[in-house]
Amino acid sequence: MSDENQIEIPPSFIALFVEPGRTKPSATRQAITQRYEFCEALATMLVERAQTLQWQLSITEADVLERMHAGLMGEDAPVPPNEGEWIIRRLAELLEWDRPKWKA
Image (cartoon, rainbow, N blue to C red; front, top):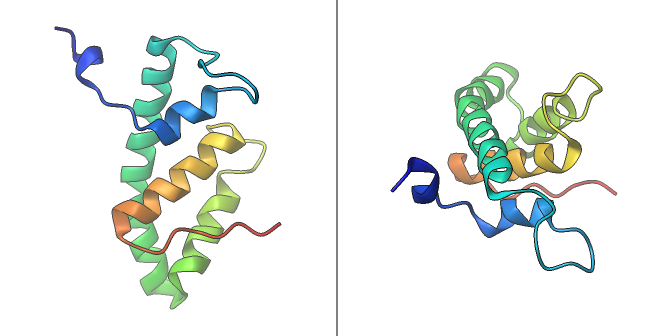
């Protein structure tokens, strides 16, 4: 069995690739797995940075998540906006912080 088959991708991530009105993802399992591995690694990498920001700036958890979200939304972001939002939600889970509430 290959490593790819052993990776369990959460439904919340797969949903990023399901277009409205569809039931199947618009990308291959391999493509989704590659994106998931990248986004999961990025969320994990941001844990220490988020904790440091909170401590250095004496700001709330929500403020940290909002700042990091803004950083993932710029033109030079390494991910599309929907993946950036998923990364921030995953970061909050890893830190055991409240799920971010996006401003409308």
